Amino acid sequence: MGNWETFCYDRFREDVTNQYKHQEGSNEERTAVIRANQESSKKGIYHEGKAMDVQFELLEKETAPYGKDFEIILKISNNSKEIRTLSGSICTSSMYYTGVPAKRIKNLAIDNEKIAANKSKELSLKVTFDEYYSKLVDQCHMKMSCMCTILETKHTYVDQDTFRLIKPELKIKAPATGKVGEKIKAEVSFTNPLPCALTSSELTVEGTGLTKNQVIPQTIVPSNQTFMTTVEILPTKAGLRELIVSFNSKELEMVDGSCEIKISE
Image (cartoon, one colour):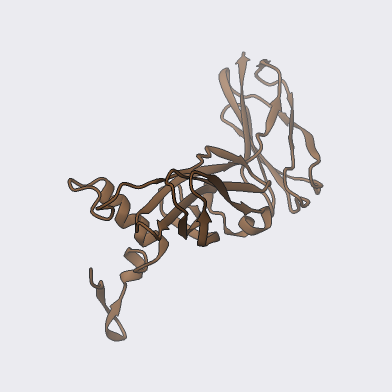
């Protein structure tokens, strides 16, 4: 639908189309067009003619553990009495929490994939930790999408879904009660889920009425090993207080935990 252009300080105009919409003909652009049609008042303008005789299911994934490999699976069932040939792709990308795509991680091309009559098969896109680690953005949101065209009938299937890579929880073991002016010890721990050691680590401890903000350097945490340490706090105010602890390192950030402690005078 044309280009978007704007004035630029060092030339008459600048084409900014790709900053506002996906490249024409790309998987993302075709997916957006067809999904928009599915929500319009005249659905199916891309699927006029014979009914679709191949069923697709992009298996939903709510979460996956951060640090581990994951897999995106497309289930395909050919309900016709003839061979069907498929072309398209399955891809995954990182995503900001607002839903805006960040970086493409991996793509699986579906090139003339044959499905026998009345048969089913699964296509799988496997993504390793090394492939996605450097491309993640805040909060580790991910998007998976698929576009697939049946060459014999010209029907096109599109779908997308989002999921999140879940970081380990920082566990805090502390007394349920305490007194103003008396030290409290809290034990914090978590298991490093990454296939590499955690370096340049530090622990941030905070809690209104419980402690001044503390930033405590930590030692290296080996791969798949449990990190454990003890922190001290000195309550200054009575009431129900929340202790918040966060572990950060060069390789793994924002491993957080919290607990409530009832403080009396």
